[in-house]
Image 1 (cartoon, helix red, strand yellow):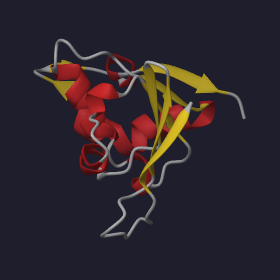
Image 2: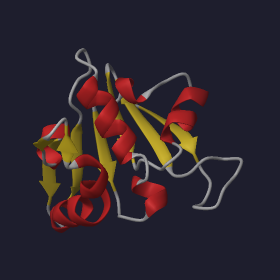
Image 3: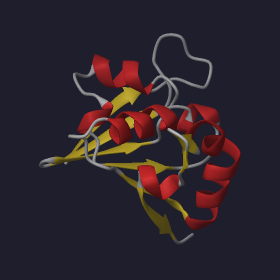
Length: 126
């Protein structure tokens, strides 16, 4: 297993990207947190959102979830992309959707969708 720190800065960083860590384990990649600069931090390590099989969200601050809409749209609209698995503490799932993602993701081409249309959601126990 390998840990790649694709972002080690704070919410206000201009140089080190936000909190984005990739866990590589054989042919699987999991993103730990998904800051709003995810496209750039992954690019800088030679990867993209399409390389991610899963994402774990530690908490709901924007510098940890700001890139979730990018991840959702990219994997939803590209036919060859795999639907990533979303892991987070169970009580955060509804709040993640209702307060952070729903506004930008709920309607696609006249159809209402939900978090499960973008991710295989796996709620974790505390």
